[in-house]
Length: 201
Image (cartoon, rainbow, N blue to C red; front, side):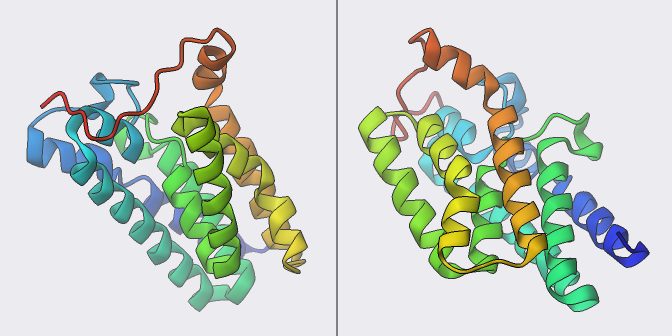
C-alpha cells in the first residue's frame, strides 16, 4: 500500500465519519436517533423512527458523501484511490470518529460503492435486496443477502480489478458485522417487520 493509497483511505474515513443521520435528526427533530429504535445511525432506523421522508433524505446524504469520497479518491489515484476512499468512507460511516464511533450499518454507502464500480452491479444488488426484503418482510435480510453476494455479482459482471475485489469483500464483512444484532434476532424470530409509513413522530 502506497502513501497516497493511505491518504485516500484516510480522506474517505473522515468524510464517512460525517453522520448524516445524526446531524439531520438533530436539526429536524432535536433528538439523537441513536437513542431511538435500533439505536443505529442509518437510513433504515431513521425511516422506522421518524418516517420514510426523513429516512430517504438520510439515504441520499449517505450516498452523496460516499460519492464525494470516491470522487476525491479517483482524482488522486484513479481506480485504486476510488477503492481506498470507498473502504475508508464505509468504515468511517460505521465507526465515525466525530460521533463516538457509533454510526450506521453501511447499506446506503455500500450502494454508492456499487454504483461507482459498475451501475449494473447496483441494479443487480437492488433487485436482490428487494426480492429478499419482500419475501422476508425484513430490510435486514435484504441488506445481508445483497452484501454477501456483492463480490460474486461484481465478478460475474467482469469487474476483476483486485482493489474492487478487496472492496467487495470489505463491504460484505462490514455489513454482516454491523448486522450481528439483526442476525441474532432473526435466529430468535424476534426481528421486527419493517413498516416505513408508520412513524413515532
